[in-house]
Image 1 (spheres, helix red, strand yellow):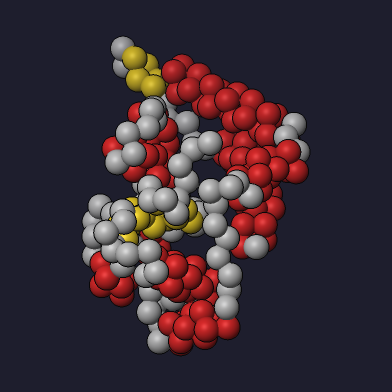
Image 2 (image 1 turned 120 degrees about the vertical axis):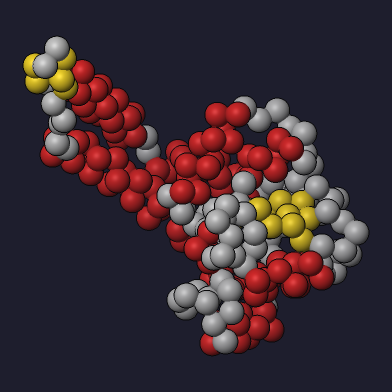
Length: 219
């Protein structure tokens, strides 16, 4: 599946990114502090040391993790009784290819057949449910799914807006916020803020959430 294909590289890239931060922290220029007209390295050096120490701590914890142990809970979630795995039919693949060659979102910037297949599968599945059901498409991939003219980066791309509206789908890049505000789940505010930082990093993670009988309803 798309999840299985991408989870390994994502795990490895995160590890490399943390190592890169640790290595680069030593190259950061430290501004001199001025106290009573005297230049010192004081607080700036202390801050750099604290950052370096924290990064090394994170790296040490990360290196102790085994990818298989991290992937297992995710794959177990994919097999949950309330999770529906959609089939990639020939008809959907053809529609995805058509969307790609027409350069319609999410393929308006680059060839993105996998993302197009996600959209076509979503439209096909949700069109059979009925517009009255409240449904969501949630993605951190703001590059491909979000309206480029929206400064807040919250609105769905115009290519997708009418299609989503026709099947009653609400788009959002904020999973934690949706769970907290719409589903009234107990989500900590730090989780909401952390998610915003992920979105700034533009990590392409897709989530489709619905509170209808077709979606996740807990245990």
